[in-house]
Image (cartoon, rainbow, N blue to C red; front, side, top):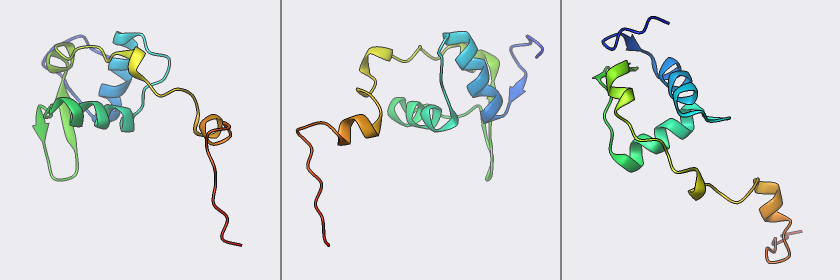
Length: 89
């Protein structure tokens, strides 16, 4: 990738750039959408079927707080003793 701050990146490229920049092990498009929604961040250029991001706009985004992540996988939470599943059999 070229390091020009005015380059336009697709959402997938923006996610890969932020993942590398923030040093996160896993970060995907859905995580990025949730991050944008919670912080009310608009893309640099919004089109009907795509969003484009400038590198300089991505550089201004604060790193997400990794201490507020969920406590494990869904299976771990469902198998814990405090969770009960209803059966309609």
